[in-house]
Length: 301
Length: 289
Image (cartoon, rainbow over all chains, first blue to last red; front, side, top):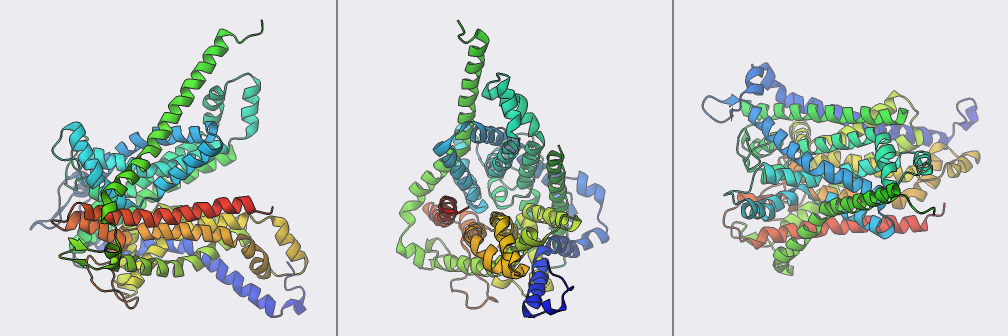
């Protein structure tokens, strides 16, 4: 670019160019500003919960979340267990399905079938979380009651299956990208040795794409962890340490969604909910960061 | 004489089985979409009528239509786009046209990935802390739209960046060599050649924005408000929250009603997705380079 070396170049279009560059740079760093902003503003509302004598031991080890009782206790263990059990079951459902589908779509399916499958998976991703929640509440609830002969169908199983289906599209897409990123030379070399297609995939492509596949799973975990409406509606929303998939539980996200409307701004309960928000933010941040580091690993390799 | 050995035959058999197995797994993943859509159409279809779409909810939301929620969702989506499209396109332009390979760029990319991964309820808390309270917008369409805009920003950035990067480098170089500035090149060459790709991403964002519930629950969406919003300072009903309310908060709702609301939502979202996908395929067929 002709810079200030030529003063005659400083005409109107030079200034327009600099102005545009400035505005575009501002837009460019908006992502960074927003992520910092989210942390700052959520912390600003929730920090009082820590400074007013948060008992860390109680928070992490007591299952008693009783914010509205006379002697309020803020034990988040049952909520953490609720989130963990639902996310865990979701991963049991969606990891094999997503990775299997990624291999099938990326390596076996051809032409129209492939396009159709990709469109269907995009449709799966497009269903809004509140509609998933409603499906959990109605269709899945009836199905679980009938199939397992239990009185209530809103439980870990229900929310886990719903969440598994919700997390599957992103995992499938990222896993397929990772498989696609393996150089064709690897495949050709293995094929030249007489390997069948499956042998190539199992022994060469999947090991080479390992990091991308791990990142795909991590992002899926992040999705499950942060999902709100679907878990709120499908999990039964009762505070419980789950011992079986048929127990109702309550998730961290769902607790905030259900209780924030009833709290007064600045009250202890209000601050506690924002503190749960900080906790969720930090955990998902960590998961995404790890996924990014893992993906960076493949690019070097 | 040189026929396949027993080992080769066995390998081929394994291959066939694996292929069928993976096909079944993929089917298990896409089958629920078809089942869900069918059930929603069967159970919600009878609800759909002009009256359902264009009248107010009545009788404690157990009867009547969804008009205020439909209009409210349109308000929220339009204002969210007004904020997120300019910022998102600028961010994508920076990453595609300006960004050097340094730590700032890496930090931006990381921030965008994280922004996409922040739980929707944390976005809601941010909206309450930043827009409702700190900025003093109160619970209003403005606060809710801004919250939605922040949440869906990564969708615009990622899709716009992709379509900008699809413009061949030679186009830019040809323009620069004529003495055009960077901005002139962007405005006259890069944007015109990628505008349809950018639109595809925006349509996708509309569908995402219309479906979100958690971010608007405490920032501007109301459970029940039987009149239409007039300014951005008003609260409004919204389709997503309405589905939550009629399926969990209101007693004695006839079973078909929430199915009807869910069906309208799915139809809205999938139509926009289909338009976006169709647009993308059409573009791919038409691309000149």
